[in-house]
Image 1 (cartoon, helix red, strand yellow):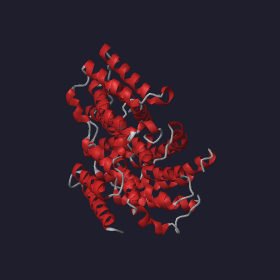
Image 2 (cartoon, rainbow, N blue to C red):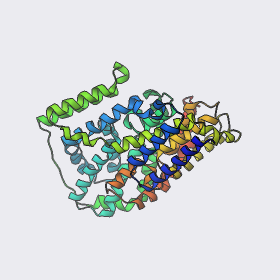
Image 3 (tube, rainbow, N blue to C red):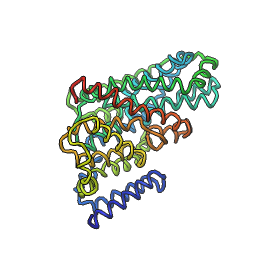
Image 4 (cartoon, one colour):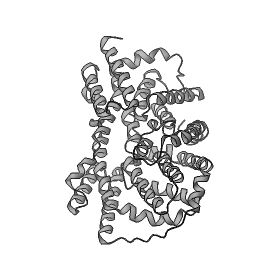
Length: 422
């Protein structure tokens, strides 16, 4: 490697190490990495800053503020808590209800982190009201984040960070319909597998919920609530139907925010809900792949492995791609960073297999494979908000990591062959 490539590799290794250690702040380390990439990366600026240049960027930024507006209305608590009290008397009803609520709110609250935290806050408030023991409370709140990680894969639109990252990093355009065909039905089967494992592992905690005193909660929506709810539903409906009318969804999110400002639901101070550190981190993560390709590092590091990697689709190919993805994920921690490293690396050595097949295998190898909280951003958010500890993450993560292999070779590959994707 030449001197520029060496500087990039050293900077990348140091940054990845700092991200796993949490020091210095990601805002600082990510900014420094971007600066090195711009100076020494031999890559056009629009490729280094591919995330801010992407159509998803504006939607993601606006979604922070729009999600804050939904939180400010208080509608989620008013709608969720009465039904939560009704269905928490039975473990099976509780789990099905929780998954349905996550799915429904996925179409209403576009920001996956804000959505998960908001649901968890409603649940935590109810658990506190019925004096549920801490051990059960921790397990049940963790379940919300574990289930969300799977449900968020069902449709392209319901996780505008991880799902969009796959498309942005790879450059492979997958429509909403194609995404649904690939991931919805097998993902639903995986969800039921995970629910079954959860029922076994947390049997005692679910029993404590069933034994807890019930509390009847009655709330009603006033005129202002109905107006706010109508505004939210209209905005989201216009946003997700972008493929029908052809108008950029960001336009409707922006109009929804303006309407919330006009109604007093949002204030100018709510701009603070935009997570600048996350945006800079995502920009740096998305840039890794482009710089590795543009600077020639991907070819230098992985070119020699082209003779090892099968050049045609086979079970051996799937095994190699999935194991490589999981290995890097365990080391790098972040799913987005792992995709930024693995996708361009495999693209540089695999020249025959359809790129959509490659990124689909990478995606299903990542989304529910975690041992530590750092391996899943959603779970990291839950841990950071104090809903559960790291021990429970490892306990359940070992199970979901094992189920990842089962889901790849038995569920996803079977379904993809059936629909003619493979």
